[in-house]
Each structure stands twice: as structure tokens, then as C-alpha cells.
Image (cartoon, rainbow, N blue to C red; front, side, top):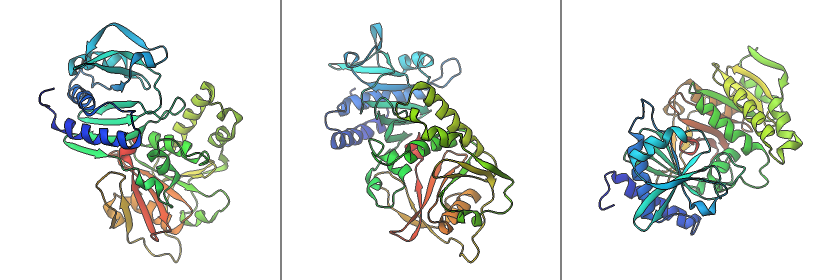
Amino acid sequence: MISPTYPAARVAAARVHDHFTQHLPGAAPDAASVEAVIEAAFWASLRREEGYMPRISLAWAAPEALRSPLMFERRLPLGAHTLTKLAPAVERPGIHLGVWRDGEEFYIWGATRDLPPFTFVLEVIAPGLLVVKHSRGERAQKFVNVAVLQGDEVKVIDRQPARLPDCPALLASLLEFEIPHGSGESANVLLPLAVSMRAHGRGGSLLVVPSKSGRWRKSLAQPVLYALDPPFSALAQLVQSPARINRNRQWTDAMQRAIDGVAGLTAVDGATVISDRFEVFAFGAKIVRLDGSPHVAAVMLTEPVEGTAAAVVEPTQLGGTRHLSAAQFVHDQRDAIALVASQDGRFTVFAWSPCENIVHAHRIEPLLL
């Protein structure tokens, strides 16, 4: 490539390569290869094939390093035209087009579902919206996001927040290369719940409350129209099932259905309430200020993106009623967290920060793409 036609590709390639080199030495392609993959994917994202937008996942991997890859008889040149034509065959989740290099030639050799841990992956999400990721390992469905490119904007994920003492388990799991050992099932369940909440596109709120206390009920308008008695426990039972250890296909499918079912409840106006053991107590609940508690006047806003700094802002700057009520709930119920999805795709995790003595709003949509 003599000169890039998508300038952000070169900027992103250098930053992504540095990031991989710092955290995963030897696991990433060189900057020129990253640039070539980004360049081809960006222009493919702006094309249409029979009216459909290409949704493509590209993996930098040599076919001989994989188990049972689908290999073309003749390798194909890496370019927007080739990617657009191949997109319908690989748009299902978990299928990646394999990309490799022979000297100065970049080519597509086939497709694969099998990826070793830390494989460099580039996914086309929408026109002009690309996400650089790496795989966690065979059993993890959600990849770790490394950078997000949208038009000429490049956001490289900053993993430092995962080391903060009051960082929520959900955020830590999204930022870490592996789901932290010993973190229990919380991160493993809340992560796909967040993804599913964002996917339905209607916006919603999910309150995660302690199972050993009922104090949180004082922060909800009574009676709750869609209160559940007994609590709905299908998700909780799957989390506690012995089958979770082996994570076989039957358990995984049942788990995803249960997660999508709970996430679907958040589309109803009001908040969905679940325990830290994943029992569903209610949905469509209206949040009210706790008697005697002041209105939440400010929150600390952060986004796990390199070059950004924490800012103390009014809750109304984050969004509408959902965000304001979630901030108030966490301010009053400091042992709870709140997950809020906006219709425009923004996603915020509210948690009380004992270190800063303030509600901490973590903007995490770059991690969920």
C-alpha cells in the first residue's frame, strides 16, 4: 500500500499494533498488515450486495494453525470487492474469514470457526464502524475489544480501569483478557445480559440488587405492577447447574435463551430487578428517591478509552429519565448496580464508588460492539 485511502487506518494500525505488542507480545500482525485489513474492511462496509450491508469478521491466522478450516482451492485477494461478495456466506456469528500474508500480498484463504486465544480479529459492525478484537479462548463467546473505528475517529480501549478497587465485575470482565478467575458467575452472566439488552434496541434498565437484603424495595414505587411471586428463577437455576462446568451445547443454548428472555423484560417501560443470584424479582418498576435522601446532584463519568479523563457531571448530561433514575437508585442503594441501555446504542453501568464517594457512571458501549 503506497498511500492509504482511509487515513484512519494508518493511525489505528500503529496504535493497535503498539497495544498488542504491549499486552500480547508476538500475537499480533505487524502494523502494515493491520492497516491493510482495516483498509479493506472499511471500504467493504460502505458497499452493498443485493441491498444488504456486509457484516464481516476477519481473523489474522494461518490456516495450518487451525483445526478443520474451510479452505479455498485458490486464495483470493484481500479487497473491498472480495469481502462484499463473500459477506453473505460468513455473516452468521462465530464465522471468520481467514486473512494472511505472502510477502507484500494480502489474501483470504478461507473461513474458520476455530480461533486460538488472542487472535487478531476485525469486525464490520455498520457502515464506517469497525471493531478490532481478540479472542479469549474456545469457550468464550464475547471477544475482548481492543479498538473502535468510526469514520475518522479511533478509540483504543484503556484497560487500566479494570485495576481500580471499586471497578464493577462486569466492567472488569470486559476489560480483562480473560474473565477474572474467582470472580464467580457474575461477570459471565451480566456481560451477555448487557449485550442482549443493547441488541433489542428499545433501551432499558436493569437493577442488580443483593439477594440477602430487601432494602432496595424502598427505592421502588409500590405496588410494582409486574412484580413476580415467586421470583423467576430459570436463569438462576442454569447458573447453579452442574452442567455449567462443562458448558455443553445444550446448557449454552438454554443459557442464551434465558439471558435473552431477561434482557427482553428490560424493553418494558421501567426497570427490571434481579438479584445477585440472578433471580428476577420484577420488571416495569418505577424508581423513586429514598425517603430522606437528597437528589443525586453529580456523578463521575468515565469511558475506558485511552486519552479520556474522568469528569464530574450532572446526571441529566448522561441521558433522560432512565439515566437519572438509575443514578438516584445507586446513590440510595449503594450495594446495587444499574445497567442502562439507550435506544441509540449507548450503554452505562452505574455503581457506587467508595473511593470517590460518588456515583460512578461507566460508559461501556465501545466494549459491547
